[in-house]
Amino acid sequence: MKNLQQYVLDLPLHTLVFFSLVETTAKLVEVSEKYWQSKGLNGARMRLLVEIMKEGGIILPSMLAAKIGVTKSNISLLLIPLESDGYIRREPHPKDGRKSVISITNEGQSLLLQYLPENRQGIAEKMQALEEHELHQLLALLTKLKRG
Amino acid sequence: MKNLQQYVLDLPLHTLVFFSLVETTAKLVEVSEKYWQSKGLNGARMRLLVEIMKEGGIILPSMLAAKIGVTKSNISLLLIPLESDGYIRREPHPKDGRKSVISITNEGQSLLLQYLPENRQGIAEKMQALEEHELHQLLALLTKLKRG
DNA sequence: CCCATTTAGTTAAGGACTTAACTTTCCATG
DNA sequence: CATGGAAAGTTAAGTCCTTAACTAAATGGG
Image (cartoon, rainbow over the protein chains, first blue to last red):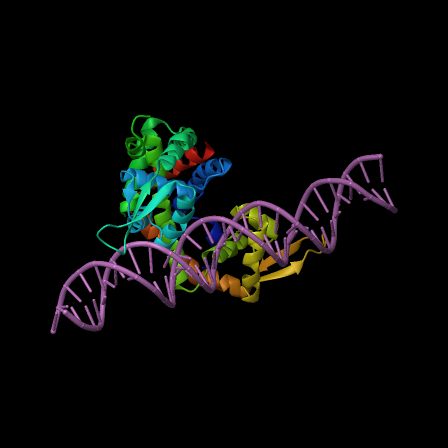
C-alpha cells in the first residue's frame, strides 16, 4: 500500500454503499427517536409495546428478546418501567414457574393509539423522498442484501 | 382505529422499507464491529483513526466531532486511550490556546494498514450479495433518501 | 425417581455515548 | 483596552445496552 491517505479516501463501491446505508439509516432513526423524546416517551419501550401488540397483547419476555433482537436482560430492564407506569402487566405462567406472561394493558394500548400513528407519519414523510416504485426497488435490494 | 393489532401488523410500504433499512444496516454494522472485537480493537476508535488519516493525519478534536457526527465530549473520551496506546499524539495549537492538534503516529498508521483492508474486505463480501449495477441503484436510492 | 443439565428471568458490573457544567482562551464591541 | 460572550476542550453524571453471574424451576437419561 503506497499511500494510506489515498487508501482511506478512495472508497470502492461496496464500502461507499455500506457507509451510505449507515448514514441514511441513522438519519431516519433519529427522526423516530426524536419524536418519542419530544413526547417524553422512550423509543425502546414503545417498540416493546408494539411487539406485544403484534402478538395479540400477550407474550413471554424471552420471545420479546428473540423478536426484537436484544438480550433477555435488556427486556427485563425495559419491562420494569413499563409495568410501573401501568402499560403492561406481568403474571406468573400457570404451567411453568420459570416463565412470566406479559400482557399489554388498556393504558398501554391507548398509548400506542395516541402516538404510534403520528410517529409512523413522521417516518413516512421522510420516506416520501422516494416514489412508490423506488420504495419497492429499495425494499427488494435491501431484502436481497440481508439474505446475503 | 378499529383493531390495534391489525394496525401494528399491516405496515404500509414506507414503514416496511424503514424497518428493512434498520435491520439490514444493523446486520452489516455487526459484521464490521465483530471484526474489530475479534482483533481486540475498538470500532469507534478505529473510525477516529480513519478520519484523522482522511485529513492527512492532522486534525482538531472539534473537527472530528463534526465529521463523525458525535459530541465533542465523546471525541475527548475516545482520544484518551488512543493517545495512551500511542496511536495518536496531542499537541497544543501554536496559535490558539483553546485548540489542540491531533496527529496520527506511525503506530496508528501501521494499525490501519494492518487491519483496515481486512475489515473492508469483510464488509465487501456481505455487499457482494448485490451485483454491481444493483449497488449503483442502491447508492442512488439512499442518496436521494438522505437528501430528503 | 434422582440429579445433572437446560431454560427463564433478574441483577450487577461495565462500556459507549449523551447532556450539562465547568475552565480556559479568544474575540469583538463598547 | 476591558469585558461580555463565544468557542474548544475536559469532566461528571446519567442512560441504554451488553456480558456475566446468579436463582429458581423444569426436564430427561441413567
